[in-house]
Image (tube, rainbow, N blue to C red; front, side, top):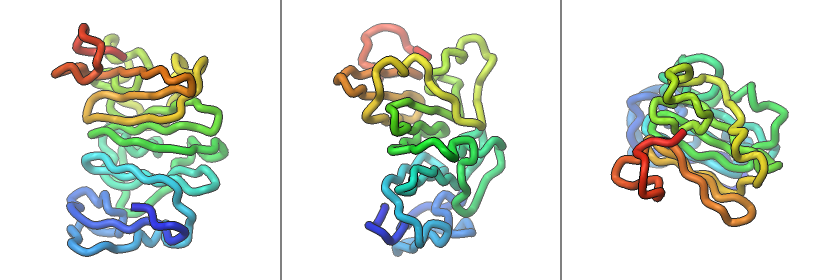
Length: 189
């Protein structure tokens, strides 16, 4: 949870260092994430084994399990403490969301960025069916959402959603059990 002006407090499972405390021990009591203790954190998100935070200045920090590129740091390396997502440095990010092994964010202009696992098309970059991009460790802009700026994003385990400034809702990724709300294809990406 982000605490106003105090950084990020964490607790719970920590097998992949997703708490960002420098180790892999679970915690039953809240602890401050030292790497973000003095930063003004405005948004946080948690996936199955990774976490993200956004500073007021718009920088994104990631930590936890790096497999499938879910941290957006350009490698598959896991991190036990917050690390700047360098590829987004200079892009003011306002919101983040995490799926099981993928991540999304919104920039100040309403653009949506995605990285991590794309085996179900959950990144929205249109390459899941071709097998060309089963995962990406660097944030990529979702070009199909550029014409109507996004105001919110959310992730399920294997699917993603965006709400635009005009109120439209877009869904993509794995469609099992009707999670995309489209009533048809099991996968869209």
